[in-house]
Every structure is written in structure tokens, then in C-alpha cells.
Image (tube, rainbow, N blue to C red; front, side):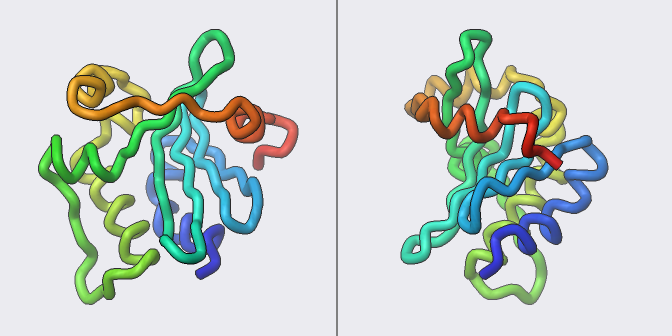
Length: 141
């Protein structure tokens, strides 16, 4: 799977509608960035694709939220495109469809949902090196 191509195709509507910038951080790492938050895609060759919602704090640190688990188990939503196999492409297209249909607040940068998230899931600090890579504006498209 070519992660960059799949993210560009699956998230084209979100990128255009919500004004995200796509940043290629490596062959297995992509970020869709909008202000102080980002959707971060990481491809593990054996385990598949992982997608996180990253929020950059005022002090420059960032936190990692598992967006897929939250949508599936708290919002009880995870849409699936018709006629697709359950692979990484399917996961990306399902996530894009779910965000577009039931999580516009998240795409707009509303942080109210994080209150609910924090009562049910642990929040992981993101390594500073990754935070710096995501928000390095000199290499954003």
C-alpha cells in the first residue's frame, strides 16, 4: 500500500472542505494538519495503518488520541464503503467517510469531544521529535 496515495484519495473531500494541509513525513508517516491539531497516519508493515488525532498544546507538547476507537465505541459510528475488503485501504476510506458523516465537529477543531474521550480512554503524550516533525511548517505542502 502506498500510504500517501491512499490518504490523498480517501481524504480528498476532507482536505478540500476543511482546509487541511497534507504533509508527507516519510513513506510510512503522513499528517493532515489544521492549526493546532492533526490527523496522523502511521503505517506498520506487519500491523497495518494506525490513525491518531493529535492536539498541540500551548507549551509545544502534543497528545495522541485514538480517533478510530473513539468513533467506533463512543459515538457508535463507523461507516464502511460498499464492496470493499477489510484491509488498510478499507480502514482509511471508512474513517474518512465516518469523519465526514458524523464528526464534523472534530474536523472543525472543536475540542468538546476530548472531555468525553478523556473519561473513557487514556491520553498518550506524543514524542517531542514527532510533534516537531508534524508542525515543521517549512516542509508542509
